Image (cartoon, rainbow, N blue to C red; front, side):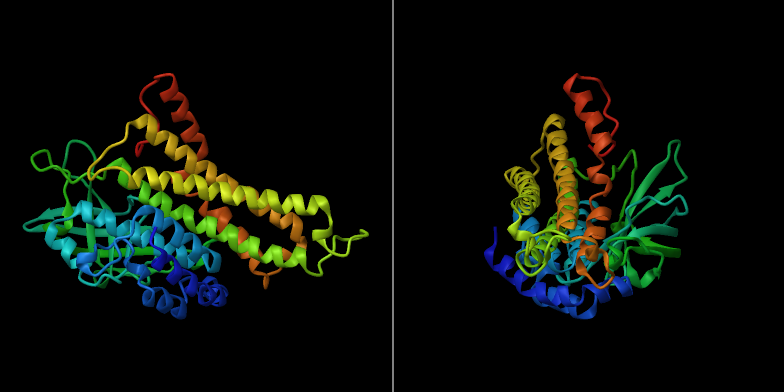
Length: 379
């Protein structure tokens, strides 16, 4: 783990926390938060050192994002998915295109979470012409480029070309209004007859296969989504710790403060235990992946175990939040109380598709009893 980067992240937390309400209100990370993250070099976490980046390993990525999440989970989410998207871009496009992406190591790359049915691509000499709409592109208003999947109608079977497109060729519709993670700028990207050069397209051709994303590489996105949620649980824990050890008393009891109650203290330590357990699980997954040699692969039985670990960690974050809300009481839901924002962010972020518990449980059972195939296409 890179302690220098972790310390840099810690120094940004007060700025992120002070601007968290504005970030949520304006549906995008506040300018002061963006400036603080950029000054700390955290938009370049996964950029190679040769290109001016930090070249952080996954353990460092998790630790840094969890720290940022203590201040503002929405901003941490954008930082994390940018880090993951830059790695994906490097796997999909040509060396020349990758060089264009890394020309500014602090630039933001966003990506849509879906292959839109409202989009299509037409092959033309030298590349692809695309039109369409792609929703939930986190960081869209900060990004300089975007990764979008484009269905191609010119084959016997449905196929998708992955494209890297400058944001200057796209427009952003502000469609993201959610109960949690509202400040992630996860809006809709729109393209109208945009030309994408072939070096910026990964075509699914029989005579020239598209560059595939190894399943192991997809874990980076899962770690980048989960770590800010652990940070949010820690941020909530900080708030509740101050309340229960201060003058807050359990309603209509003989106690002068919550911390005087043995079960109040137990409730708090249970929240701590779940948050700490979530972090241990997530770091363990990061360490396993960091330990792989370049191009190394894991058997599917190990991949499902790691996915279940992350799904369990996501559940533990939610459980910790519920315990903390019990301790704090109904005032934690007041609009001017940061606790309710942490709660809503965790409720939304831990439902990321990478952590879907019932499909992972089904695949775990299938692999345990050798019942093929798995139901998860990205496993």
